[in-house]
Image (tube, rainbow, N blue to C red; front, side, top):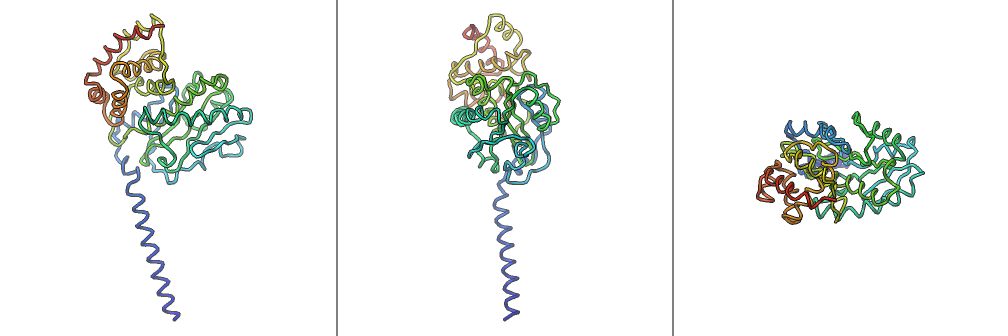
Amino acid sequence: MKRFGVIAGILLVFLISAFSLVVIYDKGKDQKPLRYADIPQETIDWINNIGDETNDIISSFNPTPRPTPWDNDDDIGQDPETGLKTLEDEYFIFYFPESLKKAAYQCQPMAHQAIPRIEEIVGKYYYPSDMNGRKVPIYLSTDQQSFEQLMSKMTSSSNDYENVAGITVWEVGLSGFYLKCIALNGKYCFRDKKYTKHVMWHELTHYCYYASIDYGQYNGRLPMWVTEGIAEYVGYPGERPSFSNDQIQEMRQGCDFSAPHFKYVHEVYQGGHSIYCFMEDRYRLPALKQFLKGTYSEPLATAVQQAFSVSVRQLENEWKANLDKFER
């Protein structure tokens, strides 16, 4: 009987091990590492340099697969030495000093209100279930100094944060898209609820837009007007930007839709916003959303042609011809 019990125990261990391997295989065979196993070098270079072209994004390529789950245990805000408080629900974790407790409770519903708008325009909101269990970590900083101190812990980037109201920090690797954090700068936010909401929605749009890109297939660089423009368009629902006559002339003379970025800040953000408003006016919302979907896996020229049946240059010329509609 004793010998039989030993044999039975060995067989039981073998069966459990075999079953575990099958489960691990079934769970892992469809994971994102297979999707991002061969990211083109040009795309890697673009990922690593997006932050050089805009001041509200820091991105990087991580060649090392992250273990799962991607929960929030390693967030800087979880360290008691930071002195940060937390406000957590099923989708978000806010980290903030005691002095911003009221602001945190105001920001929480703002974040939730962004979800249906992002789902409608971007095409998908990325819930923790889409991100290996990771909730969106949102840090609230009291002033410029605390904001920059946070960024020094989050990244090795030497970006200038002097005029940054909000920022999205993320990476792409063999495991897929990983959001490190969204951070709001108290130098600009929390005094005006409408503006705070806009910054929140802008950064959450960045999160979902960049998470939608198929980096294993995409090969190229998206101009800044595409990414900043859609973040402004989502962040200001139903509103339109306006420009002085001088600004309109600057955009007509200097904006090149195929260039990595426009010359002036107002051209990138408000100008990019006006491009999406023009797309909606001229081609209607379904075509605008088709264009966005195209940019997740296709070069800009292909996305424009498939959505609007025009070239990038034709779209640019049409927008410039209609800029007077945005004059203040």
